[in-house]
Length: 157
Image (cartoon, rainbow, N blue to C red; front, side):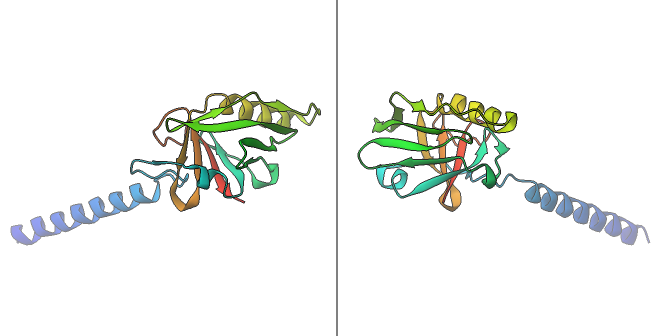
């Protein structure tokens, strides 16, 4: 009788442990950041088309906001910041992404759009690396580590 009772306790504990593991797996972030060491994005990746901002320092950005970035092969970067168009230059140097002087149009927008754009431009000013994320994402990050809470995460548009 004691053996059967102990066996039942073991089964219950195993089921609880399995459930906990499954719950932790379901809670893992789906931010385009791979847990493996990220690869540095090359020019071909950057210039492969237009990129749409998916998250900004760990906060999801609605596709309706339309924040975009395009890198061209001649070293120009341009896009839409959520309120204004922006433009500038870029280059890859020693595995680092270097932006040149940037400019933008100066339209006034609703507070939410202006705040998003301000946050986007501030975060863009910290970028030092372009990394390949999972599922074709592009991460612009201040470090060579893929951390969604400090990166701009883009998807191909």
